[in-house]
Amino acid sequence: MSTETKKTKKRSAKIIITVAVLLAAVLVFGFFRLAAPKIFGNRLPVEQGECGILSFRDADIDRMSPSIEQGQNSPYEKEEIQAAITGAKKCFKNQKNYIKPLSFSYSDEKSAAFLETYRPNKEYAQSNIIAVMCDYTVYWELGVFDVGTYKNAAIVLARDGESEPWKAINEPWSAFNL
Image (cartoon, one colour):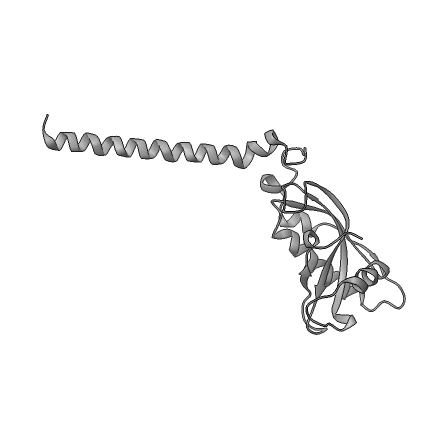
């Protein structure tokens, strides 16, 4: 057998081995991405297509109707509260493969109670900081948060001025529950 034929066979064998290893890696990754959480139990039992990588979309979050309890002496207009809730929904859009929001709500009383104990890094006027309450389910372990459902967690949002958009400065998985 000629030297060139041996080199061609070795090169072909290397290519076949490389393709086989890549295919095996893809299969292993697919197993751990989709099947392992169900087998090893670090995910709540949910029906296929309910959340996460399966079919939970931004539009599902946008369609959620919040509950708003606004008093007569509320520090915010209804439009400002709606804008803050929209800002709170953005937090979940970044985490939709791991966390599913169940509900959003605003109450002057709960917001004020949470903000009495919360100390942001920056001082904000009362009209420029708000706490929106939410219930959510964690489907994958997130550090100190176990898989499960969390109730009355606060998302703290702030803005630099009344014409500025609300931005989350404390997300629910880093906030304590009331």
